[in-house]
Image (cartoon, rainbow, N blue to C red; front, side, top):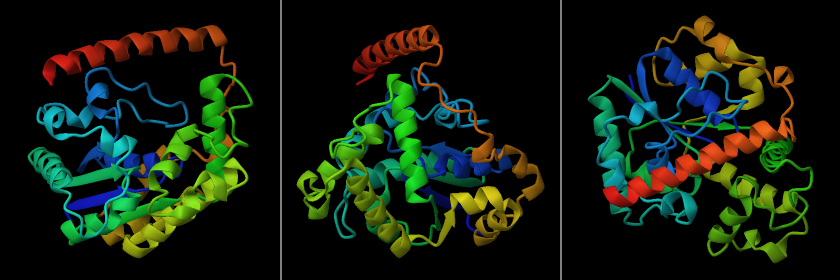
Length: 291
């Protein structure tokens, strides 16, 4: 039985659902997004749950007491340092992952780490953690793109968020392409005509990495529509007897999602944004004192 598992998927791929299933077993200490660029900030002032991340209260609760995260974590892993070749050094990343994994095993017998920012480090991850199974979740590219655009529209409160431009920044798409264009020249802005075309190239490159290194790839649409069979595959891989029927209650089919409201009570959105800005300022000020 594997006591440690890595979960990986792109933004808006269903990776939060995958993480949630492991969390809801009660048997795994589950760490959400350990490479998030604002992780340390969110450990001080929590990130507000996204409205379509059902049952996902306090994403980062399991990091409580992980004091060395403030020294070992690097914001650059989520902002710019997206690529790590198989044979690259990666000493700082290895030290950080070893710390959070060790801390997690001091809490529970089984541990799961969920990533959205590891796709182009998978070769390195496999080499340095060769025995750890990697479970990948992916989504139909058009549906994933629609989700990214809708979230950006909801956040900004308008329909046009630059999605037709090759510089579309929703969910960091253009930043990822810019940061990875040295390794993958096809991601350069001048090599695409639309935002979707550039995103699709990034999507396919990520899929190639996962196809090469993941032990199991699960399609989000299949997981939702054929939950029992697909969920069984996931837990069979690591030989854990999950209660599939119990876990099924945490799956909300996309058809039942309420539409994201672009003007979601504009006043409410403005209030929430102001509160979060103040919380973020407080967290950053406290971080400066810690660091």
